[in-house]
Length: 298
Image (cartoon, rainbow, N blue to C red):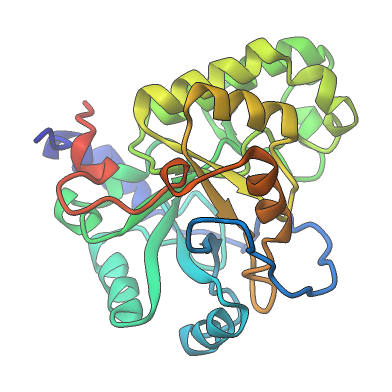
């Protein structure tokens, strides 16, 4: 069994970064909520799981009650990485991760984290990470021209990241998707094909088949499931069909905060359109086969 080396996880620079203070709390953009509709899973041959649920402004007890009401199991994720990643809560060491896991222990949920950037592993020991059911990540925080992290949803990002040449930006952005999967042990890649607001009107032209294939190839190579996002309604159907034909596994996710989690009607509709079966869906791996255990990095 390959394990992530302790050298990769524990180093002086990463430890210092994890301890850095943060000044303000921000969250990734949330699409407008749609009216709550009954979940119709008829025709699906697998249990419904929303693997992208945040506890912001709620409690695990209230969220577990909502899960039962909506007949959708939840996977809870908290942001994890250095304190340079500014959110209301960021888990940045084994002690913080341990308290989080203890809070969820015995609850009818999967326990995960949303990994931030590409240096999050250095905040935790392999033993602590192995207690998670899964790790979810995305490409929405990109490396800037001087190596700094830039959140692509923030106001004025066009001045910090050159998007004047849309095609050139897309080449860099697609490469970043592949790099995130190559350099970090993820189980699920979330918000796949999301674009900054300035580029979304050109989504269909920018996400060419070749660019989609590069992301799909990385997911296959590193054993990463791709999320079908109900909130962003992404990826769009052509990408999903291409990924399905290639043999990618999928997960369903709302990126929801209370009470918006579990609203995965769009994800379900796409699963039906694709004819997804249980074998196509992500399931948390048993101990010893999780991404943080099987990926040898560093």
